[in-house]
Length: 205
Image (cartoon, rainbow, N blue to C red):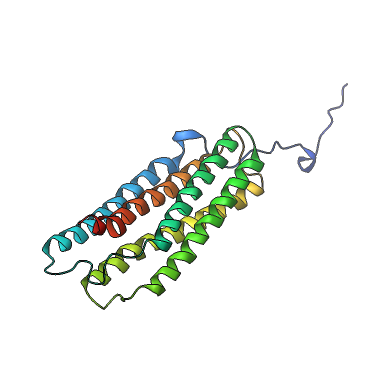
């Protein structure tokens, strides 16, 4: 009579599976699009308020002249570069290169952090405050909301970089990176709209 060999459960090899669902069927994919739609509407309302106030203004607008492009233009290039770095890293992950994905995420995080620091410096250098006049309130409200979104994005980037370093993703399952990329590119697009509205349009009139 043949004897059956019993293998303890603790010694049974368990395949290591990557964490996360796949592609656009991931549960978070639709959710982040709803977030983008909601937050996009918020910035549309804020920018509408700015342009409505501009049309109703009696006198110089902005009261202290257009905001300086010295830091803001550099910051715009930095934030665009962060999106490029993220895209480069995500493409690497799709090709199975965890190292490239990690470098892209870290690069995006460093550039995003640089943007946030320069934004604080620019706020400090403004000749007006939140309560100086209506323009000051709109300026700090709009840029402040965007700054808050940048900070959320930096948390997302830090989490994705950590999970990538731990080997949680692979060529097939990396939906969290793609989902996080949607949000980060949205933050970038919003800044371009804010920069064009607050920094460029006053110079056209």
